Image 1 (cartoon, helix red, strand yellow):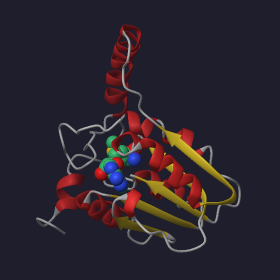
Image 2 (cartoon, helix red, strand yellow):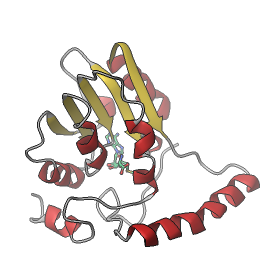
Image 3 (cartoon, rainbow, N blue to C red):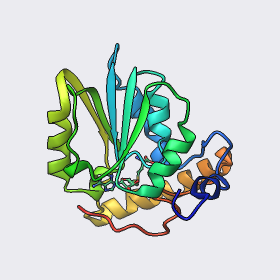
Length: 183
Ligand SMILES: C[S@@+](CC[C@H](N)C(=O)[O-])C[C@H]1O[C@@H](n2cnc3c(N)ncnc32)[C@H](O)[C@@H]1O
């Protein structure tokens, strides 16, 4: 593990099972609800610490998480150790040459806005087997005063949820306080 003990440092902020709450986690249920019945293979793009991928592993025989951040993948591998069918790739999703016959389910939770959105969405669609399903939860940039008002109105709800859930958000990627968004 780069720098040694990255997973341990990460886990100091979360529950022993790697669970915590933030607004990304909140929307995992939308993605989990879209998993097709009988899903044999799924890919989670920009999987971060792998929390969603671990949950997907309960519904799909094989789950691949991919993330460009080495420390995120270290943590994902550590927390996902021993879960059947679960594996992680440390690479840029857009550049990664996926082998195999594709996926029944391709998802991304609050990750595509970090990449070339159209290219990433197109690649996810091409990775799907016939009849496969795509699920993306995205973040839109505030473009009007109304967007800022609506976004601001969500802050109290988010703070209340954090208090209720009582689990700290370790932040992905790995404790970064700020993250440059690509739109
Ligand atoms: C905001 S985090 C979301 C992580 C996770 N999906 C979640 O919901 O907690 C965005 C993730 O996308 C990853 N990412 C950004 N650009 C990427 C790329 N080109 N290929 C793969 N992963 C990327 C980052 O390293 C980061 O972990």
